[in-house]
Each structure stands twice: as structure tokens, then as C-alpha cells.
Length: 112
Length: 117
View 1: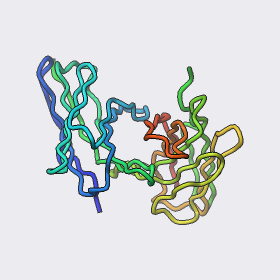
View 2: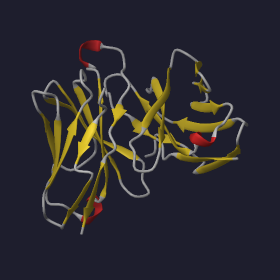
View 3: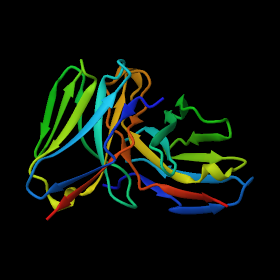
View 4: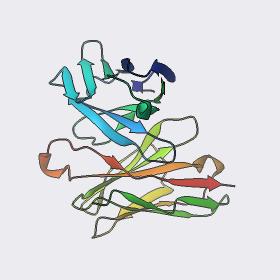
């Protein structure tokens, strides 16, 4: 029962262009969503989050969009930089459970 | 400021043995979480501790257990190891979520890679 899905295992983007990573969820109780970035041999690093009362949150080059009716969120990175090459995980949680439910991850490669 | 630290980095055990993994949270954080990332699978929630007590548990057998110490550090114990327990075990910490506090971001350590032979 995969409650959080990242359907693209990998994504390749040219440096300077926009990277768009997608995530779908099935549990309508989720009310908080996060994106993490993971480099090899390191733990996941928090990037950005969004509450279900919002539809957009921005932090520098990173913007997360939430479409509750479609149960879909996306992470936009613009402009993409070589250091953005990593595995990106989408995660969701709901109040009371306080546990993160992760997607399978998307490997983003930024090409020079 | 030090982040979440985990030890050991790597651990090799044989089937049937017990493994103990350790985690020190970020200073000021009282909530500690454990996750498992097995090969080809996503991160799966294992356990959540806060104020020394187990607060939530994922869908794992009882041979996965742990505890949280008065200084908020934590141990994860895996008894009667099986081959499929081979995985990366990640610890995360956050400010306390007890008392209705708004959601807090979980910060992760680099993990312990457990290999069961």
C-alpha cells in the first residue's frame, strides 16, 4: 500500500533550466508535506515543506505546489544547478501519527 | 551546532545475532525517530520516541525495539537478525510534538548500514 508515490525514478535536466519533481498521495488525512534531498552516504536533508492550508510555498530557488483536489504536489527548482544532482524524496504526515511516509524517490541529474 | 549523529556507520552481523544502533539527536530536540531503508524500498517508519516513551510504531515485528535515554539519545535493537534486516537505518530528530505543538521538521543523521550475513 504505497500511500506516497513518485512515479519517475529518474529525471535529467540541463543546468539553468527548471527541474520539476512530482509526487502523488492517496491518503486524504495527510496535512503536511515535505521534500528531502539525499546525497550518497548521507542522510536526507530537509528542503522545503508545505501545509495543506496552503497551495504554494517558496524558498529561494525551490517552490513546492500542492493540489489537494488532485492529491498531487510538485517541487520546482529554478534555475537548476549541478549541486542539485541528488535523490529527492517526497514525504507526508498527518497530525497524530507524527511519522513521515516517504515516496520511493526520484534521482535528479543536472547536466552541464 | 552538531546534527544528528549515528553510530556505528557500518555494522556486520550474522543471522540470529542482535544488533544495537545508536543515535544522538540535535541539541534541544526531544523527539527521535527511526526509519529503515531496505534495498529497492523507500524509507519505512519504524519507531518514534519522545520524553523517554515510545509514541508510535511502524509495521515491524516486535524483535525491533528501542529506547530513549534521559539525555534524549536513543538505541534501536534488532533481535534474532534475519537476512532481510540488511538495510540502512536512519535516525531523525525534531522538537517535541507532544502537547499539540505544530508539526516539526525531522532532521536526519547519515545512518547505520546493517549487513546481515
